[in-house]
Each structure stands twice: as structure tokens, then as C-alpha cells.
Length: 152
Image (cartoon, rainbow, N blue to C red):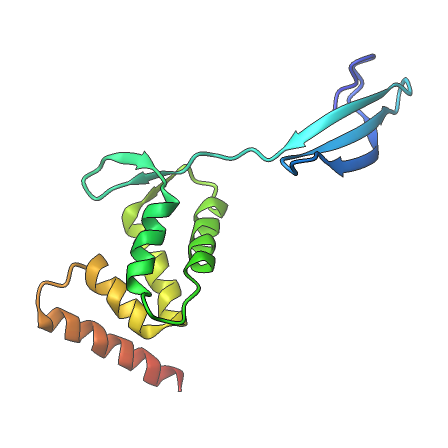
């Protein structure tokens, strides 16, 4: 951090504490060169996340859309949808990419649902993969059962 008095780039932190709303950290610093004390504020920089839809259009990531789809798939099932949604969103944000395809979001959701609740997984997959007939639905169930037998 550059000293406002002498422009030295070396300082030491004397005190750190969160600001009242916990949106940033207040740091009290002392310049190593001139001894001048000054205050800095550190905030998390968030990169807006955009979703590239199947038709190629882009739109801002909407957590409520994801949550709505997951709630439908997990209706009357023992799945904490809020925690699942937060987990998926964290994974997307942690990639540090500003754009993600809707296909990737669906794949992440299915991967996480598969480990949590198989019924919710099949419900979500049936909508996400747009099952058109009973055959494609049965193929997905067979794949799920095969995966379960391999784990045993």
C-alpha cells in the first residue's frame, strides 16, 4: 500500500477490523519509511457473472432462476435447496470466469443432486435434458442404477 505522505510502497498493518455492515475491512497502517499512519479500506471485488444461454444470448446470472428450478425438482424431498443453490453459485464464482454456459450450470446442478437425492436428480434431469419419451427417461434411470452398483 502506497503511503499518502511519502509514496513509499512498504507499510505495516497495526489494526484490522470489519466495518459495521461487514462489507469491508478497515486497516490502520504505518509507513515503514516515514512513520506516518493512515487508514485503508479493503473490499471484496465481485466479478459479475453472465450466463450464455443455449441460443447464444447472454444475461446476468439469476440465483432465483436456479433456485426455482431446484425447488421444483426437490419438492417434498429431503434436500436443503438454499444450501445446494449456494454451493452451485460458489462453484461458479470460484472459477473466476465472467461467463458460464447454462449447460455447465445444469451439469453442476445434476452432479450435486445425484449425490444428494436420486429422485430429485431424475426430476431435474428430466426437465434439463428435455426427455421427449419414456425411452430416454429409462436410459437415464439405467445409467443411474449402473453407477450405484459400481459404488458398492
